[in-house]
Image 1 (cartoon, one colour):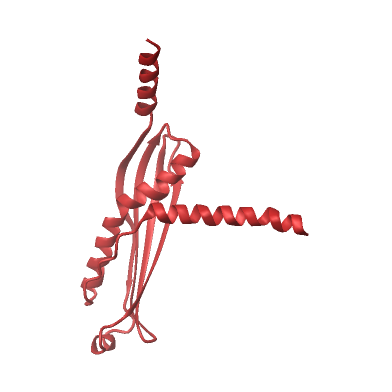
Image 2: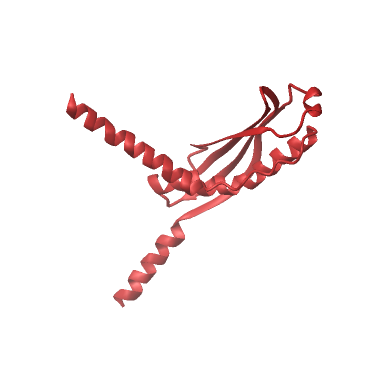
Length: 167
């Protein structure tokens, strides 16, 4: 009987935790190609830089959060910018029964994993429409990025008391 009650309580805990996508949308798109048409005459072997950023904020008091994945891609040939494209893919995600740190991790990993394929497709479409070869971004491991950010934060937090103790 006690085992059944414990199993029932565990199921209640699982049922109470919810994380769902409510809406997905493009928040901002920007494309610049300042060196055209001259850049098309050059051998196409650009250096490509990809900057990635995520941010989240509480959207309301009902458990909705906005997550914005920003990707900026810059392609250069020598010192000339061939193109610069920025996409901010956003979504509203509902979370219930998930507390502070686990919620922070879900918003920094699961939500961007959902948004990334849409941002990647938008970037590819914009680049092709700009007259350049297709650009398919490699998949991103948001779990690893989150772990790295937490390790950096812990290292910075760990260094501060040690420095204070040596002074």
